[in-house]
Image (tube, rainbow, N blue to C red; front, side, top):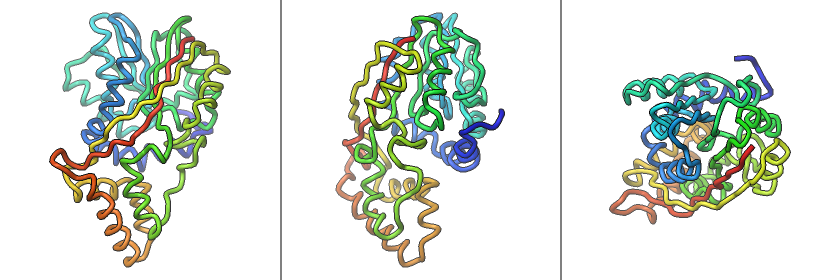
Length: 282
């Protein structure tokens, strides 16, 4: 895979975030399950269609897309993280699916066959491009005329309660992770719906629809499980590693206390989690 303007994001997901997501794959799929379901329902996938899943990660949405387009359709997942793709392939094999494929590719620059796909989908995979206009133009080219794109993307830190409750409590002691600026490559790269609409229209998409989704997120079995998970996230772990022991201890205790009100019989569950559901056609 040739180097691109996204080289640093590619390195980060291959070497840092990728192994973490592999270790917590089942948790992330459950955590984001409600958003995945909304994504797939809105995509209206039909038997016989060819689907491209961008930023497919460990493959859950690609595999479900493949099931929906059987028996004659196919799904291809692309991602830049080799460890995540390795797990995705194992999951597809375990599911007995032979019409699903995973490739290492940067969707901003990869040369897809023009007009090959009926649908492009993505669960939180389109926010990281260094040049969003180039990336979405490339994806539009990969779609047949009348083909459609459907994706979800976080609305912003203030709508990411599942991570920000603990993060805000710990921040006075260990600081705030880098790479979270709105509308910059990163988790919050598509927080502005007007900007996203403009990017899509400029890339050749029409009939752009942007809908607000709010869903509950279960972070862990209990407070200690949720806290351990949040601390294992690479961006968070880096902050703790750089802080002196007393600051680390204070941050852990503050985060623990912040999570307590959300713990109950169903685990640690938070309800103010928002993503944009975006649809458009070529």
